Image 1 (cartoon, rainbow, N blue to C red):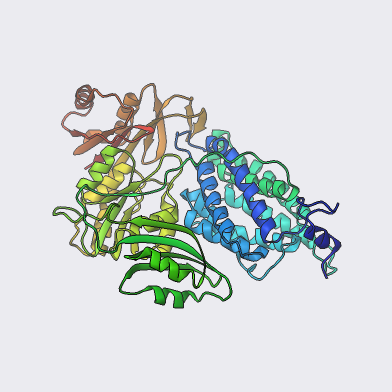
Image 2: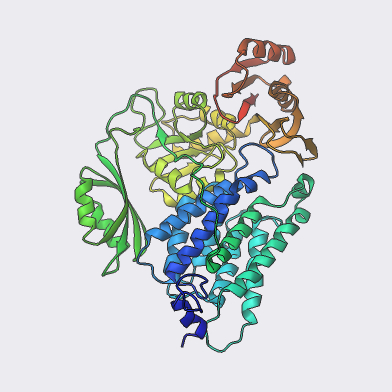
Length: 561
């Protein structure tokens, strides 16, 4: 029998009024709690970004976590028949899998996956179930990281889960359901204490004088949960800071004959959806590139069809159709079909890019390009979709940013195409890898050759410090020009041009065969003067200057040979 708290919760409050606080959480209450967490995380995203160890302007932990959670909660809202707590949490976790952005977002998505495991049949979440869920978040998140470190958001997740389990263990075992709030309060206290301790666990944090940004994101989410339970006011959610990823092609493209890219969610009504049967029914002569992901209650469907209206009408016979998206592929970017491009019927390269100049460079070397984004990085699901839209069995992906690697790895599991990752962490490295690409060679040989080429180049990036910080033993003032060599902070300078020269010196440009400079959108336009100075600094070295037009980074450079 439900406890008095449970009966009070069915009315919303124990004073007889409707609305929060929620003592036990069902599907609708779970949704409200997650929406409060999104609002809190949205409001704090910029501040969380600001405490990244590296004071670079695209420090993005808070923004990526916020975008990931927002996508997850939207998926939960779409699951309107998920009346039970477990079913709603599962829908949220599924949405996070596709919406994961950046390394922090991928870890968050895995934490939510752990939170949902084993709750499918739970109609109501009480304190014990909440504690068990929080405990699983850390286990799943730790398993998602190849080399987990203490002093990160992993430590904060584990502290929250351990404290919640201990608090739940102290509850009387009388068979009644226990309110969630006391256990959650304990978890928040432990998470905040663990977050404060991160500065003493990682030398990089101690040196920079900040706590872990991902851990602060976890604390913010938990505080948002508490606000949702209590019905406390939450900040308004700011507009989305990111841009959806879109494949970009050359001007010459043809209709691939598949008509319309049609995506939608299908929710069970009277009968369960057999995912395998559904996939089989959708795979017809008129429907290509069929992707069905989900379970018996909710399926996410992607189909290329000549008749999207007919497909949707048929789908409505199986259940409720929502979140419909139909794109005319004859108007979209198709894969390269002209001679001299790098795509074949079996293999293509997808390069994450930023800036019109870099776009042109990647295209000229035979790759399709997709938007790398500024602060908010592309979601794993969007990376998978961009790869699938190339409509070839194998896609070599160049992430070209260290904070896109984990999303790319997660996209491997979500895509219909087989994605092969060449682990480039800079735009310059991506270009160097792509030079080794041979479209008519086997994919394995290409991946090996491109990875080898990537390892032979050093990349210099120059940007402006967004905050004062001590990092890597270097005192940084806000507004300093930063030198990043292979993504690591190695120095500062008064101007971005001086920082470029310093980075090239550190990278061994004096002994290089070729140095390529990619000025950004805000770089000095006097290319001739820059080339003259580079020739004086590095005599005998071949210098090339190619417009990159990238935002936030005044210069990107590669050192080869």
